[in-house]
Image 1 (cartoon, helix red, strand yellow):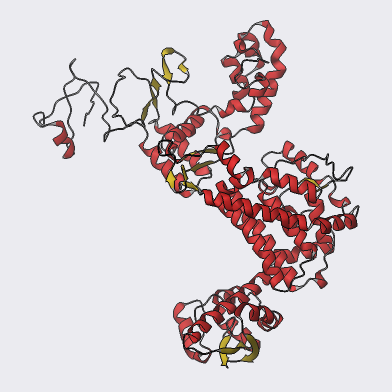
Image 2: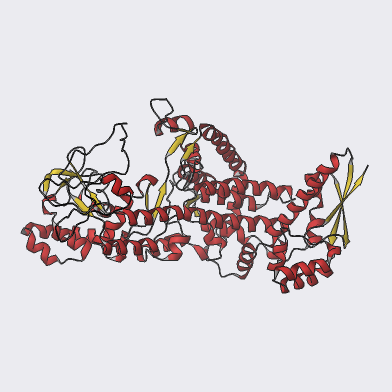
Length: 634
């Protein structure tokens, strides 16, 4: 409501109207500039502090940071467009960037750092700590302790010339010029600091609370854009909500409160971490439910027991594969670590390889002197025992599904969607084992070992201590990488392994089993309607579409893309009663599913799931990928 013109303020014709009335009517006025005029900023609503006290202005003398600078805002928008966020966080950041202007950055009380040029004031907490992560990259070269009291590099020498050298490619001459001769003894330390900073920066990930998106995180971005060249701008921000306990806000006053130590004491490290992983992702408030944590104790215990039951089988497998087909990938992970050191930004490495190679304790009193493998060697050894010609449909399904879950978990980790990591990396793979066996798969297959190994590799970031222990004790693995490296065939040049990897990348068996599950679902749905009429079903007759006509159908449907044309086509062929269904899309994708083979091969599976005997016939009643279901009654 105040307009400034050429350093003077004038009162217009609305001088008799109250400010609030003029403001409501969106009428712009100016006021005479006199010694009695006081300009102030008024909040749009009452502000209540965390201690439930009304906030009032008490500090008139104030330092501001000008975040309204348009050049800086434009640079920050450019930075945001290149960064990785969730959609919600990105929208909130852009909205906050448009809103932010001058920000009061000083206060007179509390903890914090004094403003360098005026020690009467402290930097407020939201304005502070926006570029401190730079210091993390080389702090260990300057001090041996956390607080910086045990000096390696004397603090008295830390001045602008030092920071210019480390961060802005300043010259050594400036350091020597602006410090005493003693600084020559520490040049090597500064060179290490500079090397470490250039290696670790820019910042790969900043994790913070959603309540800081419109202030502190905007300051974090704007300060980086203002102070550093584009190559040092942050790459990613991830924000999360608050943590609730048993669907209620944590509060000491109500007793709904749980410390980390109490949580670990009650549920153990692994169960606590798994429960935290499923609490909630992104900006939603996470909900730690104690019954879930308690349930994870039993689930993890059962998981360990299942691996223990494989102990003899794993030992037998290891004894047979020792020194067999391992030379090709020997020391693979060490080579990858060297690549990481040489090229930190390599997409293949950063996206497909677990950056940390874990050296588990090799001194196991129960095992004596034993030769440990890495996970790449172990998986390669299992795949090398397989033959394309002898693979069963069930084994193809297990391998393809396992590969699919690995890719999903890889994507989930990239998105920091840890609830889905638990879903696909733990639950779904355990369910896959049960499906494999119920389909008639061999429960003694070496692929069961592979399945449990992949679970341990996938959930290692969630429960590292347990994963390391089980990998070392039972699988004799002390170094490991993300399993997709093997499944994507990055290691072998042998034709047989290449062919196996090609089958793994396919999805035909997954589609076939999904088709089978859809038939079972339809049988149960129709049977439920019949049972309501008190009729007892004896046999289910499945009339499968004649595959000789399938090519005609596929060509016709693929040829017509217009909705009206498809309807016309269906009306001409109404005897087959084609509907919009799940498998219509597969016709367009030209995915081959041998209906006759799948249904006949797994007829016993259908009978076990439905509880009725099954008879299979060829006929015109069915439609592609949806057999016609009829019942014979007692």
